Amino acid sequence: MQRNLQFFSVFLLFSLYFCSTVPLDRYIAKFHPKTIKEGDHVARQYPKFKMEVTMSFGMTEQMILFVESVVEEHFKSRFEVEALSEIQQTVQGYLGGYWGVQFYEDPYMFFTTSTRRSPCFVVLDVNGSGIAIIKGS
Image 1 (cartoon, rainbow, N blue to C red):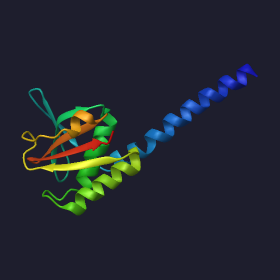
Image 2 (cartoon, helix red, strand yellow):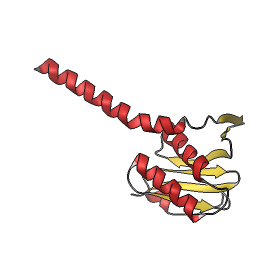
Image 3 (cartoon, rainbow, N blue to C red):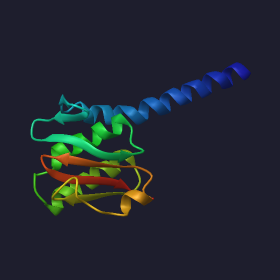
Image 4 (tube, rainbow, N blue to C red):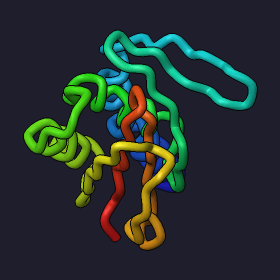
């Protein structure tokens, strides 16, 4: 009985991990960005955009790559409510919870209290525009 319980718990942990990461990995695999290192800055060149993380908290590397892939697929290089809504819906669908998307003309000159209240967020420099993707608390 003890052995069966151990086997079941190991199987359950493995399946939970596998099921939670596979959809993100499939989405990330749509694009193969080239990593560009400039001093201490790391940027990724996607087919349409060059992206750099300017600030993040509570996000794993896999989550950041996923968010970058979503931005690459839906963003139109200018402020468009429909594109930002598609980004939000896709992120919420894969990561769960409520996520907000904010657009800034300058990725380094923004002010928001959302990042202070959020358990995780990422701010991206996307070809000179800023996009913040913030999980609601």
